Image 1 (cartoon, helix red, strand yellow):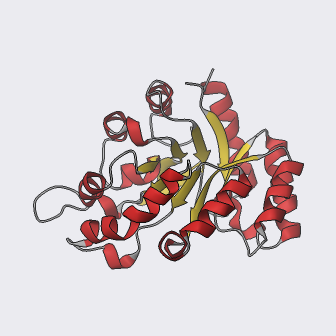
Image 2 (cartoon, one colour):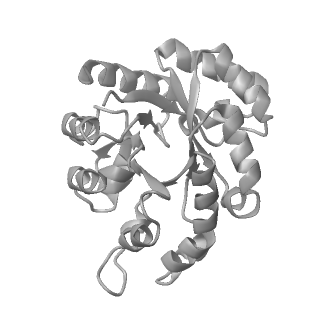
Length: 255
């Protein structure tokens, strides 16, 4: 499957605070060569205006991150917004703190299962984005992620696997991606490097992750449609330059 390379707006969140800034930022993303985007951490801009700005810049919205309250309190509004965006994948970007305990995965499934079912009935899909905390071992020796996935089947919830956080959480990135390919409709590409004793994020291809193998795995699982470049921290470098470096590497690598 040919994977589409997109940009995660969280990388440039400081430049997406209002309608004018978002329009300028989307134009810069499009000028790099991206044709798809994920919406995350943008300012309080009307969805109709967001869609218009994306259309004006030739960018298709393919994934979002949303507050947990949207899933739990206003699932119909969440569905309407994604229909307006023309976007199939509605993402939850973080496991709320109240689920960070041994009973959390069961309560998460009880709370989010109905919303995920509503999304499925509307032709959409809930996507869960991991960090490292989900790979903490639970009392039975399994990880929190193991418990979450056992309670939320793949037809209800996909996983926007984040390559950096998989590595940070102590996983073998490639093995984990191979094992859970049926959930990986979208992924986050983010490299992992070191500076002295500090672990850092890096543009794709500029760190230590084996992205040639990662991309080969994703290209052959028959599921992954979208790979979104994300870099939470650019350590003083321009986030647009980091997006450009990642895009250049991926264009050269994915052929």
